[in-house]
Length: 165
Image (cartoon, rainbow, N blue to C red; front, side, top):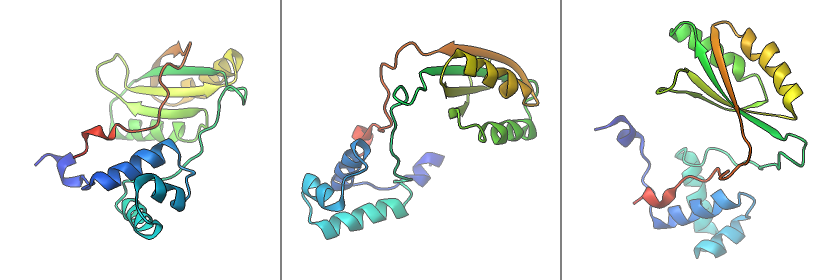
């Protein structure tokens, strides 16, 4: 059996409906959620708690409008490392985890890079400072390629639940 098959959590149609609604609006009260999915509040809450206990619901967050907060520059950074050792990767990952500008960090394949970062900053001056004083100073970083987001065409945190049985 594939590794991901061993860790899958069984989700029925009602759980899926609950997940669809809370992915769209995590601020729903249990009463509101129960009404939307057609359950009474107690069974709805039990299902939500079970999904939390199973690790399906990891956390609930509030999504902020980056532009209204003056964070108008989003950069995608491809980073190459000088050595491909577990210690070098761990040190890099530990360091970038400390930077609030880094929204996402992926170890990747298929590019001339080892990592892809999504970074949000106010403007190009702040990006320049972030790149020169943080990213390029991490031991092992051997190459950096930056691309800048012109427009967010799709910007979603919702997972595609249609694949669930």
